[in-house]
Image (cartoon, rainbow, N blue to C red):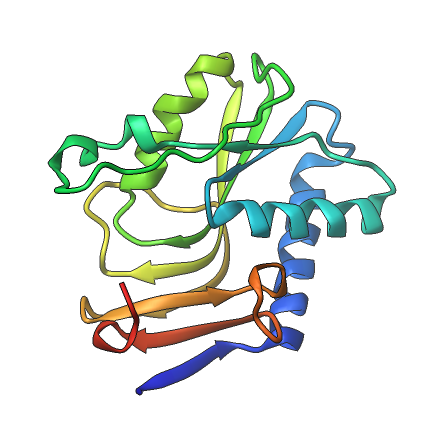
Length: 184
């Protein structure tokens, strides 16, 4: 199995702290800001960001989880139906600054779907995108993140694998793996 470590647990913690410092610089008191983690994988990062922001600022930033399944442009193009995840947005985003969080930015299609899904909860004043990994040179849509943990050059036969202890991994880590080495 060809597997290359991108970020180990220690570097991942440093990266999350850096991303939070950047958010603090731009959102100050977070009074008009909310966090939306994209289901399913962006929710783990959103929880880590919310927790670190609370540790650094003493404030709890409202955080929700957004499922984009029925907003995806490939929803009806699959042989097996996609299973929806839970959407939990316990606040109105009308006129708020939304920090949209996902673990890996690849083609941009999930983010486009998230922008459509988000409108059901109000019209935000501003939307910013935070990702742990930006897969360079793979975008199908003109979407770029505001906050990036790390830019990674990849080819189509590779996949970024994000492991969280909350999902059963022995430690938090991010790997670059050949797709033929990953079970579907």
